[in-house]
Image (cartoon, rainbow, N blue to C red; front, side):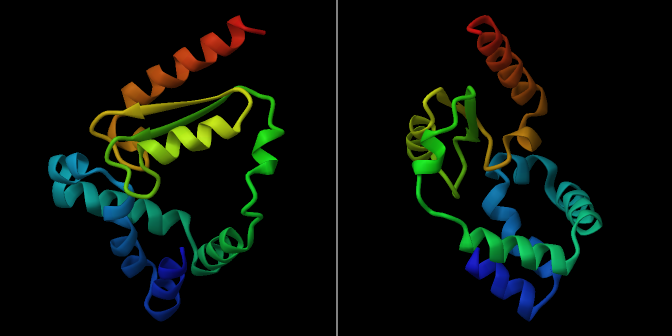
Length: 139
């Protein structure tokens, strides 16, 4: 996040996106969608974000409480979904994060990155649908 903030402050949002893109999109998706996919996501990112909002968000993310104790108090069923190609979190860290929640679970999606709902929208929706069905059945 510090590197992203430095990139944003020393360049602009398109350069920031090019820095972030390979870190949150799977290699499979990059290969499959190529330049059109990159440009489409970049345009969406640019339309949704102002430099001020990104600067504030990245700054606040660095100032947040790093303690995991807050997570242990969340009683709601919690799903951590990430891809097997997630270089920001990774499968081991995803499982460790899910274990902090009293009712947490981690699901690793194949051929997906940090934003698995982009890599495999249908698979992500099915994963979430099953999670909700199980959570509602246990109420």
